[in-house]
Image (cartoon, rainbow, N blue to C red; front, top):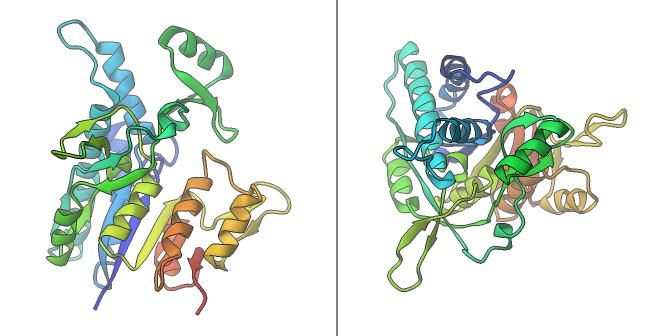
Amino acid sequence: MKKRIVIALGGNALQKKGEATAEAQKAVAAQVGDAIAELADKYEIVITHGNGPQVGNILLHQEQAATKAAPAMPLETAVAMSEGQIGYWLSQALKNAFSKRGKRKSVISVVTQVVVDPYDPAFRRPTKPIGQFYTAKEALTLSKRKGWVMKEDAGRGYRRVVPSPKPQDIVEATEIKALIDAGIIVIAAGGGGIPVTRSKVLHILKGVDAVIDKDFASAKLAELIDADIFVSVTAVPYAYLNFGKPTETPLEKITPEEADGYIKAGYFKAGSMLPKISAVSSFAKKAGKTGIITSIDNLSAALQGKSGTIIKKQG
């Protein structure tokens, strides 16, 4: 039996050096596809991804080109656009990677809706950064002109922040699981999925303007499809204590309880490693489950227990 893994790619995974053109991001996607294709013989694979830079650019284009005849699309629709866009790049990259190896493997990208609570306090306190980075002066101008909430993001500049409610359920979870059971590699819950609310009586779905954190959505998907391993792929090979300081220390094999202790001690930043280690630790609290944080270059080694931050219960 192959182990089932969910691999969550960061929103910047396709923009390693700030690449914004489609061709540049497709070139990076090809590298990601090669790395993941190497794992297909050993694992059942589900890929999720962030969309922070891409959805921000989509919104920017929408707003700049908006007219009365062709108004800008709302945020939840922009999230759907980014799901299709990045899902296309990744599915093509994977298919090409298999073709180069003389293999045929089915890959599908599923536009995914994720249920959130309409009364989630996140709607009153926007925190999720999207789009490009701005200087403090540019951020102030945008805040006044567009009414955006702008916040400093992990020392890298200012970004627009939007509500980020916690995922409660995934609408297409049953269909995604059926695809995996059929041996298909699935790309799903892109950008955390399209945030929707669901009525209690008729289960009517309605999109809401927000962006769900992709790591929390990925952990929820991993839970619903009964995955064995959840990997959050980021720009660094490990989660670190005192990151960027002389006392920087990589975390290797730790328990969920140890991870939670480091979180409470304030070692991780909200706009950077905090959601990753929180989501991975939460998943790893379940018996027999493994959570990993690593880079795409270290992915294979991390799955063999030779690299990355590996979070698992003792015993």
